[in-house]
Length: 564
Figure (cartoon, rainbow, N blue to C red):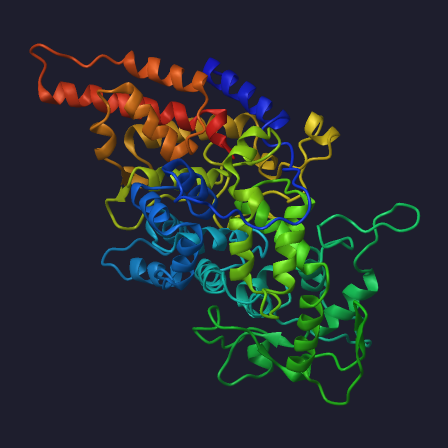
């Protein structure tokens, strides 16, 4: 292992013990702060770190001009960026296009993350994909179907959670991934029972969680001080009966199409449809609700009752609100922060439950999120930036372009790369669990979570450094398809202080410590700009080396990796 990697690992270990190890300890319910003046550039950049894939000159200017709330409103009103399915189909239709592969899905992600104007939707879409997990790591999941699933998450990012839950449930990518597509009613003669996979995971991971919660996300306890389970095995079995009798879309449904034969060409993109002959007609009891036995199968009616029951469970507000806060703002939000957001989930102020647009706004405008001075002063506030967010941040900050238009950055899942690729987690539990605590740390002793550290280890740390060094130096992707000219930075490179100030703004939200800043300034000044008879090409090469060095040192620092 290189000395550089040892140093970086030491910084990462320190990060585990300090910067990502706790939640802001706000008091009771607090309104979002009402700034008396427009946001500063630093405040705007910090806001954009939470609300997008990273700040740019243009977005900083827009936030400063409009303010936080108006920027959010503008983003929510913005048309959805071109779809991932459309991107993939267009790439596959090009003359001489290679055989279809999952790489077009990755390319569609990077293209929209780096250049999509609807950045708030892009960031929330990623967050939702880490709660409602579908993964192309399962080879049964078609990559075009996964792209359609991701499009659906984006379309519902600011809609109602109930509608999202239904569309997630009926999407064929989810049906295949969690094995409830073509799920059949019980057959006593053969001993067949309905598949319970989606019934279990839809409760555990997507709606109510394992234990009953208070509004602030803390666990309810029984008289003996033990957490109270949210559901039992009987609840899973009852809900599994609800999730029977749905399979592939077909204009002419039959037993053959239910089982996957004569599949319609569009079936991987269209919601699953009910097949009454395969749906359970027995009584179904789950989460305090009972659907009586019936003589006639009613898969659509039973599904509505099942999803309504999940949606209206009191756990959903705090369970989903806390995870969205974790994805956007901080790993360990204060109970008061969770309660304020969950209250909005339960009622958006107009009597509507599950308004995700209102929830996202509440998360980003909350006093815990917007109080820069309090967050910076609190060593327990923040989160580890996940690897694909770091790469997208670099692409946006420095105005990268794709020579091919295809954004040809394939899988980055290897721990010698980023250790993560979009829509490619190894299990339904996402790349990392929301409650993950690095073992054997002070963090664990204090009861704090650091989810993203579940995919951080010695190899992935070195992999990230090497990947970013190559990207910053000469571009990234097939044939170095994604590159930047560092045009603005080149204009500052003769002044080390000005160059580092720019890195501080775009990458660290003005939070770079004096010590780190001085190290980067000194290193940049160590790259001499030739004079005398030097050619313009020689001068430009030196200036570019300065830019790349400042960029790399900033993004390799533990301070950058901590989103605060």
